[in-house]
Amino acid sequence: MRIGCPREIKNREYRVGLTPESAKELVANGHEVWMETGAGTGIGADDAQYVASGARVIGKVEDIFAECDMIVKVKEPQPEEIARLREGQILYTYLHLAPDAEQTEGLVKSGCTAIAYETVTGPRGGLPLLKPMSQVAGRMSIQAGANALEKVHGGRGVLLGGVPGVLPGRVLVIGGGVVGFNAAQMAAGLGARTVIMDLDPEVLEKVGTHFEARASTRFASKANLEQAVAQADLVVGAVLVPGAAAPKLISREMLKTMKPGAVLVDVAIDQGGCFETSKPTTHDNPTYVVDDVVHYCVANMPGAVSRTSTYALNNVTLPHAIRIANLGWKEAMRRDAHLAQGLNVHAGRVTYPAVASELGYDLLPIEEAIA
Image (spheres, rainbow, N blue to C red):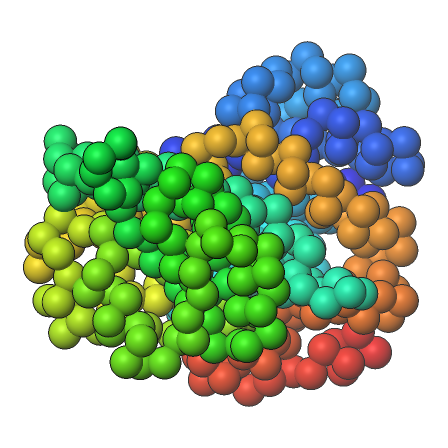
């Protein structure tokens, strides 16, 4: 199979779909790898490293889309990339389609086979291709929130860890999954007064046992959420409904109860965001203010730590890429029901139930698509 990896073109996106080491593995399995010139610059990998791995370096991205059987990326395809996709071509990347009607329509019209990292499941549960980026984003959320809390950035002027004689800041983490757990680790590590909220008693028991006295847990009832939001200096939205749009947990009315200069970090913004007032931002302009509350809603947070993120991502995406290339996507999915859950669009049809339901498409069951 001929596998193409274009340079990412989303704002301030420095990750790359394939590292030189990953390219080498694919070549060792008998496949061709075409890298766009400069694709690895953001992780410190130059063209010569890819050539040494056995890949070809291609100057025109149009040639990669025109000639390659599978396109491997990191972020969802941008409009000009969608325009280059074609019928029968495999797209393997993050998609986050449920809140993105325009992208979904473009992929449907292209006729391509789109496999989303974020909906591939694992034999022990969870979303293993999403997990490493959730770990990164969770940890970064506290860094970003701490920065936004500084008065020079519009925040309250609160140091999360406090100092002797001054109480530390209050951090509320909504959601006790991978993002929330990693956010809480960072917040508690800084010495912040940290509260983790979730609806699942088992999740609360798990995180409570782990953090012991370093963080508190609360059931995410509406009353508890309203009270905790009003008290917090920093709120991290860390909720996820796999493949679907995130629920709106903090309303505009709740925002009015928050302290002036408090900060919201919406890690769920890729899935539409979990705050009513959330809208995607970029690394160039990461924050905005609504009702005196600072919002940080960067949709590709891990792109800022591109080298760490790329290598963590390739660790989990490469094995599936090899199987898809070796067996073809249909046979790979017939043999691996977890990989099959990654199929979101095929031949002009939506194949993932949550996306079809959210955006009003007739569902093509995955079982039929791979038959």
